[in-house]
Length: 198
Image (cartoon, rainbow, N blue to C red; front, top):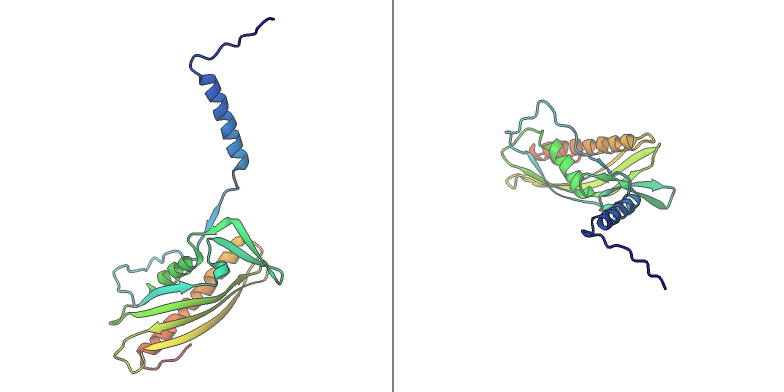
């Protein structure tokens, strides 16, 4: 019987190179599509003054549990939610909303007493080609020396959107801007001694 001897590579470089190639090919085949990151935070204004004191501090933002994630979610039909695994917010949704509100509210004129706000988002829906909705309740805690130092308000906002994700995100930004404006007006009413929701 004749034996065929296969020479063993002295350094094993050829074998390791082949295994590396196979591993890289497998990883590239399993890799997911590129992730796109979106934000609700508006671009900075040229007139922003970083040295001015904050008149309103966003303490906390809460959202429904099914929305408390990083991926964007769209409504599909009457009973389905579509999770976009390749499109993410820059942070989990509560923090993304908090950052967007804080950025907008930091642009307000500082006051002697800081007003604190807690926001509870109850609806944050988007239907491509139709509308984007924001329903939220917020609570203010202002100057304790005033006759009324606390206030609770609600806002219901709907903006039109196109079919693209960019148009949907921009519609969400408009809704957050409307919420910030609502909070600013409520704070002014509270500080003026005439507490009332906008």
